[in-house]
Length: 113
Image (cartoon, rainbow, N blue to C red; front, side, top):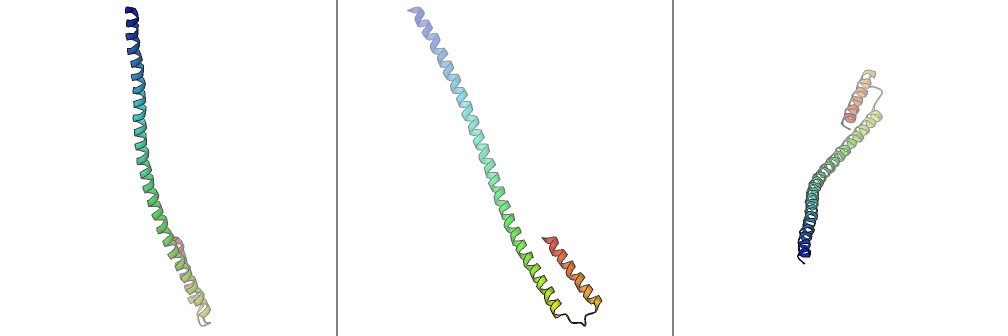
């Protein structure tokens, strides 16, 4: 019985050591998982912030584009009106100067777009 008692005492501490080692590994894995979750949440918050910023920029650019398209339309209408009301009294030099000015304005508008 003395021998059986010694074997049991030796087996129990070894079994406890195995359980403790297993719990230690499990604890370490849980700790690393927690750190990873925290890191991923921080990255998600950063990405959400960037998405919001970019969506704001897109909205702003769309508004600017709409304004510039309206300006182009207005300029085109003015040019059409000027051509329709133009009389034969306009000298070729004046006509070319006006045409150059309109082209310059259109180029500036295109530069903004």
